[in-house]
Image 1 (tube, rainbow, N blue to C red):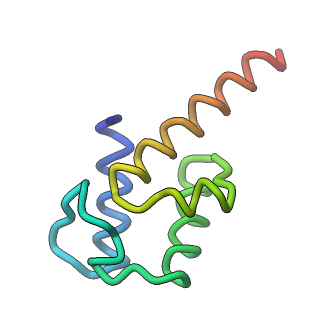
Image 2 (image 1 turned 45 degrees about the horizontal axis):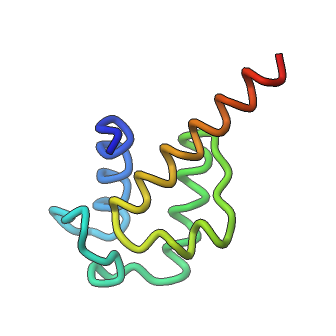
Image 3 (image 1 turned 180 degrees about the vertical axis):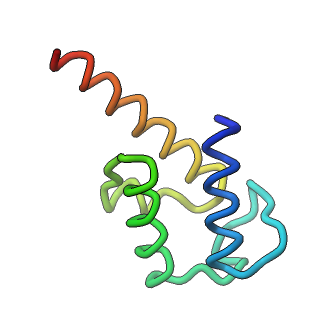
Length: 86
């Protein structure tokens, strides 16, 4: 798991969900994540990390670990696409 991405995502989710600590493997719904907050968080992450997250990818992100792995994978894809375009 990418530590820098984890730190940013963890802080973002803790602030939005108003919790002191998140376990990376606990389902985010256990912390009160609902569909509205989920959409807001995805939009903010897309902006912060300059990535795109599809609806299917978003639906598969159930834990903080899932979110970090998806954002990291999306960042790698973006960089790969940028390298291939030049």
